[in-house]
Amino acid sequence: MIRPQASVTTRLVAALALAFPLAVLAQVKVGVTVATTGPAASLGIPERNTVSLFPAEIAGQKVEYIVLDDATDTTQAVKNMRKLITEDKVDVVIGTSVTPGSLAMIDVAAESKVPMISVAASARIVDPMDDKRKWVFKTPQNDALMATALADAMKKKGYKTLGFIGFADAYGDGWLAVMKEAAEKQGIKIDAVEKYARNDTSVTGQVLKLIAAKPDAILIAGAGTPAALPQKELMARGYKGQIFQTHGAANNDFLRVCGKDCEGTMLPAGPMLVAAQMPDSNPVKKSAQEYVQKYEAANGAGSISTFGGHMWDAGQLVIAAMPAALKSGAKPGTPEFRAAMRDAIENIKNLPVSHGVFNMTPTDHAGFDDRARVIVKIDGGKWVYQPGL
Image (cartoon, rainbow, N blue to C red; front, side, top):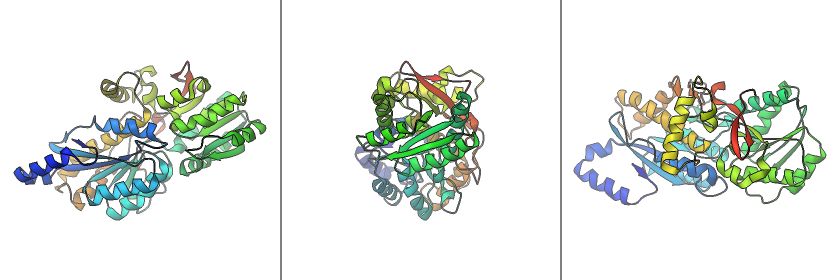
């Protein structure tokens, strides 16, 4: 059952409560806040659509999903989370789509003792582990894992210098930090660094400075359609070096907005993006294709998005954790059940999902290894698997 805000479902639940009070009170509630409007809408829309694919019953227990839009606004994301916890009494929160909002939600998760599963990328959401972050998990690959893949590919291509332009927020700052470390290990020097805001309409000044530094390659650390802005400007200004993007650009809306200016771009991505191109021996192929098939059956061929995959993987964590939490004897809607859900998620092992294989531990609440990344190239307006990189 999915509840987009409050509506007919609210009245239905109230009516059911009169007839079956114990059953309704025992219902597990999953709160979701994602950016279905604003600069990150191309992330949040497929995430919202994916929630509709989640089961209405898990381990014999009815589950209700309450989905809110935070409009890519950090303050609204926190408000949504507080509403979901205090008014809707959810047992777990999934969200939000972007790093700044997810970082701000950590305090709410910790003070409320409600497990949170972020669908944003920054490693800082779950690292370093502490008393607050023990309540927080995340499904996108850590930026550090992806940065290492990029640095390896850059070395194999023979690049020695790198320019960087990223969001002027926690996402861009996080990527700059991990890329510096990964590049240095491969003998690659970052020559120039520029930043821009998610809602900027021009980056001409930043791009001219990058081109003047004459780097062999440039990395754009953006997410969703705003990641296309520096790329288009670089092409318009005649940059001839290699352009890289992060996995934040791995969706079809980015391809649509960037158009021909995307050709030849390389980026790290989750296996789901090119699952059909991977060998059958890949341990993620089957689980990735399961999500792709279900999403496209509901939303149309070619509609798949890696961001929706992050939401799917969050749902798989909930599905895998619920039986163990229920076996604890704790009742849904209670602090004990929320704690049991947290403990169960932390103990998930060898769970193949759309982007990798989860192995959670008390010190690793991301749980992915190298099986969660591939390098892809944009060729002919399509994502093409690059097995040699």
